[in-house]
Image (tube, rainbow, N blue to C red; front, top):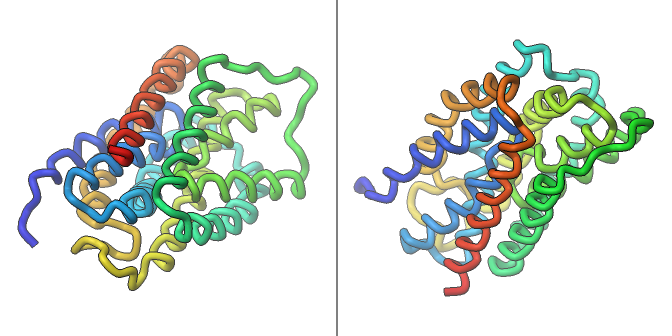
Length: 268
């Protein structure tokens, strides 16, 4: 297949995604899904499949981003590995199962669910809710249940889990830098289970664009993740020096604008 000029947008998207994934521990899906959906529509991909392709491609791209980000956070001693071990079984089950729900949903309701969820995430960032001082992390069973819910929603919106796991951990009075670092580590099992699910559910789907593997569009995957792998450590390093609360508010506004743009592209 000939080179597509739209492919030039993917490295730029990867640079932004990697930076914010490392900085805020969010996995980058909040940026990738609306941007990829918009780009796929512009490239003339079938409307019925653009959101599914954006979700699957985002999940696959998060694999490399999360590895790069978690390594940097681990070097800063910011990953609570006991939390990662406790929450991962539920994460794997919830994420893999969630891809089957997403694969059978129509494009419009799936896009609306994504936009509504991201509006919720943005609101949480803007108001910066503080946890009660007495609250603590639950035991193994509670962490597993939390992982099931985080994984399921993460599969439906193709996020690394940070939009849910960071608020969950800070709500349980985990230090915000540790919550971000631990979320980056949790993003890896989410991305692996989600990628596998979207590959399986999209396999043999009629009408997918060339160079697709299931619901994963390979040119976008390679160009986005290839750049984001190098920018994620930059964001992760700055997370320990920049005013994260202020940056989250700015990022929340960006998320809302991206979701509005995505919905406009689909409905128009």
